[in-house]
Image 1: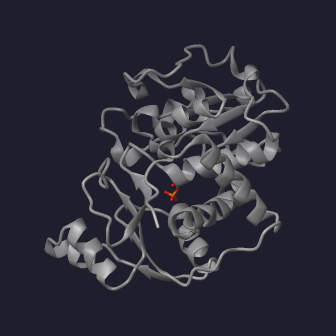
Image 2 (image 1 turned 30 degrees about the vertical axis):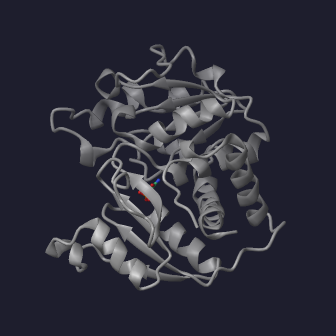
Length: 289
Ligand code: CP
């Protein structure tokens, strides 16, 4: 058994194998694994897609699932994450799937008793989302020789941070667009002219405005769509062969006009479905031989 902490910890071939494996599960080319282990979900931040799809992935691959409720667990009595994980390990739970608002929460954890799957750590990483995004792009284009624009709240986005470097490593060309307040000092390929460049991209990846991490002073929700989002007029500028992605949950008529949801280039639903199969592949990576 091993941990799954960041996608960048894996070799390119390992990532490509996970992508192909997820698609093979989805297309019923291979049967699902069966582990008969116990898996704990510890979500200390809100989630629908990641939590439910990891739970389904664990169940479909023959595991027992324990949902550790953060409020009623002994974490609220001051028990440390290390002691909580050791307790679960003593109960023969094999994996803890953890979402936390603390960046790199796993860094100082001893995982000799139980392995960790990182389901999101603050603004730092969201490796299972990155994998399902890669699955979705590869499923559509069957190549990574494509141009991606990631646009939105880069500053607070673990999805962007997980995706940018790994996409470049796999051969995708990645540009980034963000309002000034959401830019960071990281060395990303920022573009400044959104409207005159949109037609050049094969993949438009929108990001959620991470309101729960914002300072009050931002206060730009009302003007966001027309100034920075995928508005109706920008939708018309996209290539007819492009695909549109968003990790969800989206803020309707903020990051995207709701007409985008009916556009045939929208892949948001497929991303959610691919999340299930990508997470079965991740469980196999952690639990498999
Ligand atoms: N994309 C994503 O992580 O969604 P949830 O917060 O609903 O899990």
